[in-house]
Amino acid sequence: MNIIADLHIHSRFARACSKNTTIKNLAENSLIKGVGLLGTGDAQHPKWFEELTTELKDEHHTGIYTAHGQNFMCTTEISLAYSQGGKGRRVHHVVLLPNLHAVKGLQEALLKRGRIDYDGRPIFGMTSPDFVELVRGVDERCEIIPAHVWTPYFGLFGSKSGFDIIKDCFQDTMKHIHAIETGISSDPSMNWRLKQLDNLQILSFSDSHSHWPWRIGREATEFDLKEITYDSALNAIRTGNGLTRTIEFFPEEGRYHFDGHKNCGVIFSPQQSAQHNKLCPKCKRPLTIGVLNRVEELATRPEGDLPPRPKPHVKLMPLSELIAAGLGCPVASKKTWEVYNKLIAQFGNEYNASLNCTKETLRDIVPTISALMLQNKQQKLEFLPGYDGEYGHLLVNGKPVGMKKQVVEKEKDDVTKESTPPQTMPFSKKKKPEPIAKDAQDLSSQQRQLGIEDF
Image 1 (cartoon, rainbow, N blue to C red):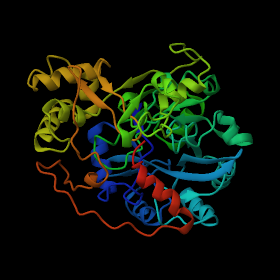
Image 2 (image 1 turned 30 degrees about the horizontal axis):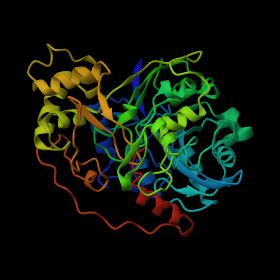
Image 3 (image 1 turned 90 degrees about the vertical axis):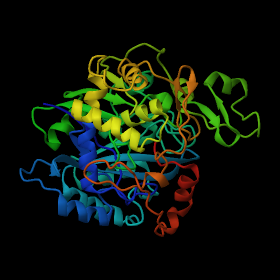
């Protein structure tokens, strides 16, 4: 049974996330997307955990819960901040849990180290090996997956605070790590260049910070399972048997693909950065080194060479963004929703529309959009690459499409929605953030200043 899974998302209790994200909204929009198994995200957060225990049902005790027609797996993301090897480390890890009982155990274990109520993605000052031991002490079926491994600030290989070798991060607990998450600024082919990753599964999930279909499932992993259970999905992740392919964001559209300095408007390829000694030519400060450069730095295999057992992958731009670019409208505008809803009615879900469209099936769609959809399917879209926290821009006829403060920004992602996307999208007032733990204030402030709401 083939099923597309997005196991890294966030609730409204995580910072820089839509405050209208509910289980119902997540279920409905992920089904529209074509996702058949969704992570709960932030499972250990007390308020979100209370909602999960109320709404999710596991009648057959498989570890896969159901709500509003969607399948859910208990998941979360934890941020670790510590020093190792004379360097400050900031690493995020996704955690998969076999059931809500295990989530309760994780809550109890984490509470011995700090608070879990101030953020759905709480920060702890423990090392990655200590974290692995803590999580496995709750249940050995829990799985730790390094999140968005190339993100400069919070990825395992990140240029700002990461490691050069994955084993240096996990040390003796490396034997319990079976997979990594690519993040939206890299794809599997980039990760294939590191021989040290040959024995690990390469997974992709969205790290969505809202419930909208242009966020949910923008990256995902397709499984082929005999039955949809936690144990069968876990076995696929640990062995690779049952992993079919990944669905990827175009890495050029990711926020950290190229190098650059946002404040000065400087964007560089790795070669250009080298020519400037990785310094901004305007302010003379260090550039934020992006994913492509960091991959090149750590690569031990030539570009184009394959690892022993590569899995296929396909790159797709979210359909709402594609339509918005074709129309020159915001992503949540009435015009964009009208075209999007028409395609969903015709194809059943977004993945089907993006992967199986043809000239014939798109004959009633605006020509500009139909042309972009076919280019998307054929992997032929081009982008002005993202850099230093700025998303990349789609190129149409060689020119970047301006994305004028669409509701992809965190404040404007906080919108309301009924069971069917409405024709107007009112924005809710921005809420004052809750106080956070004293020992986490500095890093959380850094996250907000950097605008790191999506990786």
